[in-house]
Image (cartoon, rainbow, N blue to C red):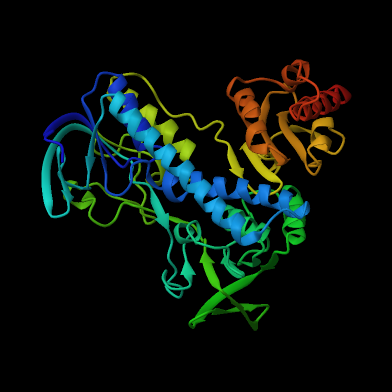
Length: 461
């Protein structure tokens, strides 16, 4: 363990919030150390964003090979897991390289705050005391565990679901949010019989119903059984299967599968041995730490970022806040502006949203114009055999300034960045419409949606 005893900035947690905070702090001249209790890179790198997207991409490749009668499901999944692990190892190595070349000291172990300027780091029975002028808490989150469905045996969290040695013959997913849909569809493409149980009226409730419809259509094509309005009640496990009992419409039902995957949300890592009680730093009823516009907590020299603060639990939100916190510590006038945080679901077709949706704008009684364009006649989408979906743009009726955008379709995860930039810059739909987009590309659909909005604006003048 490092002999480092005193630093300017101590970052606790090395996920996409923590390592970015440490890197930026060091760049700004702060003597910086980062503490990680498990694996450098955190959940996102090892059991979250990176491995899940690698397996999803491999599932799509397998589907193409299967259509050509060139795929073996068992071998393909084993290869997919090996590919995924290679990506994870490369990404984790990259984080370590950034820290070492950036002058950040890496401390392995679990950090516990003992007072407002001191932490103890424990690993394998050894302890190290380190003092700090500033601290950035970036401890992330973990899957929520339901009392009736404790993780273990044939009950999986997303962590275990990403590391199964072979694709299961059958899987029941509790929760129809983005994690449940992404992993459920991934396994379905590898041949698993998947059932998704969702307590609400529909899956992916964070998106408007019309955007979700193409995803539901594809899930059914993939053989996924979606049961909405369902309440999971209990399970019975045996050596080879697990039977889940649930209620729907006041009737009892059950489904038997090889595994049950619980994806009902994530819980902030502010409990346990972090030691917030030792420094008098309160958390909300949801376990979140309240912060100001510079990510500063109630204790002015201690900052908090990412999943342990209010807002969506997204890696890119954590990375954004990381830079704000580090720059605030360095005395800069940085502050958060959540005007345009993109949200992406790596389903098929992909979903993406940024800014205000049509529903949200109407709830605020904002006079708006909606511009739409479909992928169905886009040359690039047709060439990719992925012409399902559309782009919707929400703009102010009088000025045409972009307020939000939603996409369902191929490469939505990539296309949403142009629209996020437009919102950040205060661009209008006319700006987008007059931007020359290369042909044939998917980006032309953005231009066409903007042109549609401009025509509607002109018709109201």
